[in-house]
Image (cartoon, rainbow, N blue to C red; front, side):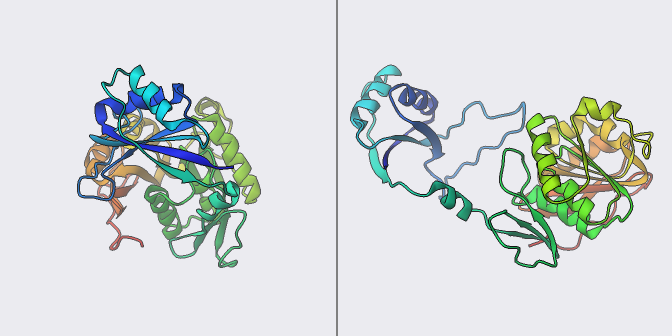
Length: 318
């Protein structure tokens, strides 16, 4: 079986409406891309929860609609154009999409990832490149965190550089549970993960079981009342949160309160240009400084009770 893609370049103001109209006219799926991708005119779209761009479109947008090969592509485009009251159907090109083993093709896009000095994140369909290394078996899924994003890598590298055998670790916003698992495999005694997404909690539990890591995962409300004889005050030697700057700022009192006296707080999901404002939000509780930067993202680190921010790492990881 094969399909045909219809490719239309169109101005921003029509991109979203045309996408919806193409679906109504019989397209199987539609995506919008930056038509200037790879050129000096490329215009990345950034957004955080509550601050998303008003439109998932660019000044010069490319709308790509997938259709059955035997469909009348010209009729689909004409119907969609009429539905949004364009004076004339836009020009379009087509390209064939051959059938493939989509599972194998998708798997081929995910190779083992080497992080820090001795950590490998390995999909289940691959052999571990270095069996003696710290191996995390982790497949791409619904929860964030496979080690491919700079913010995840930064947190993993901090944990590797600051092993805490026998200590307690809290991964707040745990996603797939990858940071909690790294901490556990590096010798942490008590590890907990928290996330607002029930699907993430289920994914993290499954990943921890697969990697033979004993970790407790909670939704926030359950975590707030969870009995923990070893941490009566709900405080941890290390608290790591890889989220985004806006929620991190809002959670400053809560996350700082989870750090035990003399403990460490590590934050990521923060763009370099946002570092000062995030640090300012935590200043009443803990002094934070940039530990490392990678691809425009930073990891912030501080020690509770330490008056000055710790020094930044001398080099950015590769």
